[in-house]
Structures are given as structure tokens and as C-alpha cells.
Length: 386
Ligand SMILES: *Cc1c(COP(=O)(O)O)cnc(C)c1O
Image (cartoon, rainbow, N blue to C red; front, side, top):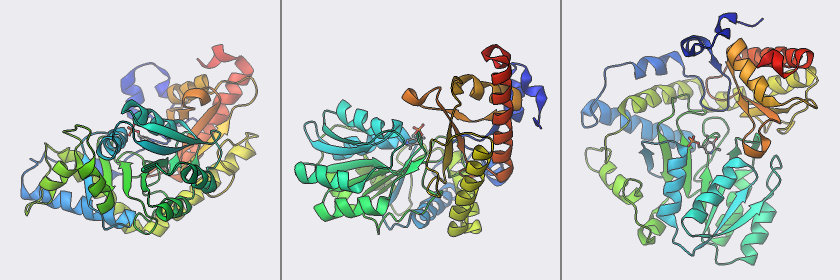
């Protein structure tokens, strides 16, 4: 049942050796990505690296269904989110944020830090945002320049209807910035057709790679707006980064995360080989399996009980049970790493990821471990599992 009881000691080495990532991010990496990461380090100004960089740009454009230039930054998704605010906004600008969870609130915080007047179009955490609410907010506030939203809200498991939100912003000529950190390579995403001006993603969710590469796709409209935006910026300046990239011999402005880029190249090749539609179908299938197991165990779902919840499943804890010691017990004693709730949801839900390289066996083991940890908790109380 528990696949490796030996991880019960506190040695981090033991946990490193055996703990399975069944979390919504970071996610496990396939063998060919591990192999690519282990190759001798490349310099960032040699043809071999330029080729890899080119392949990653092309692969991401194909996956995200866009002709926009792709820009990679040496940071995680949040760095790309911050770059969107400073390349598009000025202090005093009015912007709108669709927020229904922890990552939606991150857009609110970022835009406020840089002095924007933020109109937050909020729904309850766990609710599915309604494009009509955004349409109303934009009609009431015609000065809004930019809309920020989260395609897949990883704190709740909710995926919004991006096509409909894109129709709302396109009809009003407002820039649309989308956090697609946990949706890209998990669910269909039509960057160009849906009118996404800035796509933000990250290497370590459905893209089957380690954390460390932030991804942007930038429309011409977004780049024009960036030309006019007055906030000072350097490392995160889109135009300066793209200027280096667009030379005859494309390069990165600064030392690239070369090994990670080569790893991402392998991951994208794998995703393409499987086929994008097959990849999306696999996510839906794993979501179904996870929800079925949760319900069979008598647990209540927090994430939606339908096929839209294909990135992760969030389950509520039974009355009187905190998710925090359960997550800890699953990690320490079953060698399974899942995620607690974020912020106000901490202690109340457990999030099981089924994106990227996470397999059916991973999901099954996670549900088994969850059942075991809950049973022990309910028999013994907190003392028994901590
Ligand atoms: C993981 C995640 C982020 C960014 O997190 P980083 O740790 O900075 O990569 C942002 N938004 C969503 C929806 C995420 O899932």
C-alpha cells in the first residue's frame, strides 16, 4: 500500500530519494528531461544553445497557438507577472483584475504596488468567474487600460472560459494579460484567436520541467503599449530582451538558464509527440479518476465536479480535520507530496495535481495515501500523524 515506508525518518535525503510530486507544481519531470538537464553545460552564445532556444520558442508558439514572439526570463512565473505590470502600466493607471483565488489576488497586489488604481472584479474563492461581471466593470470604468486574469486558478482548481473573457476585452479594445502558469500544456489555449495580448507561463507546472523559466508571449499591441509605458525597468524590460533575441543570431540578453532551456526543449518535444489533443484528453481523464476516487472515499470536492477541473482536484477535509498535518503525513510517511490550501484555504483543502508528467499511478497512490493518513488521523488524532 504505502509504497515506501522507509521515508518515515526525517532525513531529507530519504525524502528526496522517494517522494513523489503529486502537487499542482512543481510537478515531476520525465526521464528525457532529466537526461537533458544532466548534459554538459552549454554556454549561452554557442550555436547548440541558439538552436535549443529557437526550438523552445517555436514549440511554445505552436503549443500556445500564437505567432507572437515568445520571451523567456530566468525566474519563475511571478517574475513574468511583475514584468507585465511594469511594462504596461503607469502609476495612476486604472486596471481591472478578475480575482477568485490566491493567484488572482497576486495580480491585485502587484498592480497596487506599482501605483495602479485597481478595480478588482472578485468572486468567491472556488467560484467560476463570470465574463459578464468583467463586461459590466469595464462598461462602468471606461478608463481601464489593461485586464489581468488567471486562466487556471491553481489555488481552487477553477479554470475560467478564456475565450469568453477574450471576447469581452477585445470588444472594448482593452489589453488582456493572462496568467496561464498552470494551464499551458494542460488545457486548450488559443492565444491569438482568443485575443490574449500577454500570455504568462512557467516551466514547472504542465510543462514538465523544473522551476526557473518564466515564459511570455507578447502581442504587437502589448509591445506598443510597453513602448509608451513610463515605469523604469531593466532586467524585465520586454523590448530590450526581444531586441537581443531578434538579432540574426538570436541570443538572450543575459546569461540564459541554459540547462533548463535544453530540458524544456525535451519536454516540449515529448508533449508534441504525444499530441496536444491527447495531452488535454489525458488531463481530463486523470481529473475524472481523481474525483471518482475522492467521492468513493466519502470526501467532498472543493474544485468543480466536472471535466473543467482537469489541472488539479481540491478536496475538502472532513469536519474537525485539518489538511496541514495530513499533507505532512502524506509527505513524510507515504512519500507523496501534495499541496495544502493557500492562505485563507490553508488547513481546509488538499490539492492533488494531475497535470504535466503526473501519471494515473501517481494519482492512485496519492488518493491511497490520503485515505490512509485520514484514517490514522481520525483514529489517533493529530498526535498520531504529526
Ligand atoms: C504557480 C503559479 C504561479 C507562479 O508561481 P511561481 O512560483 O512564481 O512560478 C502563478 N499563477 C498560477 C496560477 C500558478 O499556478
